[in-house]
Length: 436
Image (cartoon, rainbow, N blue to C red; front, top):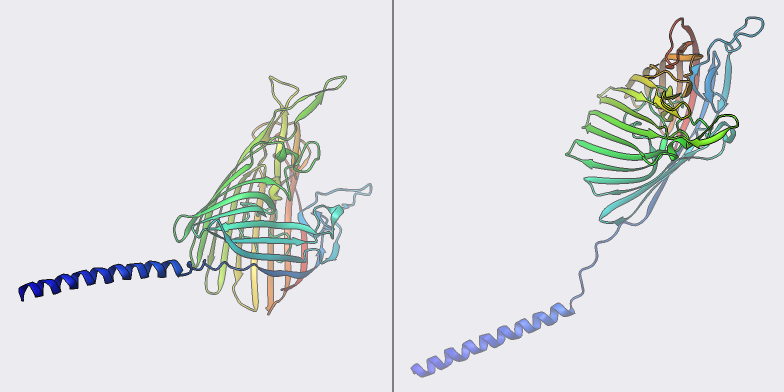
């Protein structure tokens, strides 16, 4: 009996081993026959068309420095008297324009490099120059890779100093120009989310839409002559109600490659560069009934941002032929209080900018509104009140804007000294826009 029991136990053990081995073989066969896991579905390409149809009806009390048939006004022109002693700039003007109507395309597509992808394309009919008014103008053309915490953007987009979440909401198409940086550039930008509310963006860019004034008059020559792109860093904090940030920029331009001198004239290399540092800061608070915005900039050589200033050219004591450069200093500040009402939203904008000249005496100014020992803009102040009437996708905005400028004779640094002449322009604007 004992031998029988042992034999049965041995047989049972052998049977269990055989069954286990057969089970493993079957599992391997099943695994081999099973299909591979389905790949993660990729987002399909998508495109959304947007934009608006806009018309501005404009009346000015005085001639201003402006572009595109007086649509974009900068500052009122200085007193200019004719043979009879009449100020030829003290004349009213008006115009009706739809040039700022805009169209854009937002594109999304399959992931790439483990990141979500998107692109943005936008243009209007403002033209790049007065000679191309009414023709299509490229505003934005950029693509992005977004890994949630890190985002890369390539292409043409806003200058880093222009903050899309904090810019003047004025009805005037100027968007606070002279007081708030404006324009687009081709750039490479990396944005890193440091935590839930804080991010840092580093941008490298070259001038595109607007640029520094060139001694030769060639557009963006000073930027393309430089081997170093403009470098801008922006630290930003943002929560549901508060937005604030600070930016620092280093810029190095080479205004000209050669210069001619002597009799007979000979051409020699010109190695002079203009280096500048600009700092900006901004804040926005969104309350239940109103929003408050503020922005300030301590700028050097900020012509490309459509602001006062630029740079001076002068000769060194050791090399009287070569032209070297120093940036003109420009400060600007603006403040805006606006209602958050969904249908009727009044708002008030106030801006101020001042030309502080350069740290050296120059022989030539390559700038906006600034000269050497000639009539120059010292400072500009603007106040604008508007009411936005909104219904669905339609907006009607009457706005009353007053801009005053102090003119005087500058010294060799570009700063105004002595007596001032104050001139002002009252602009009434009636703007309509249908957004789609």
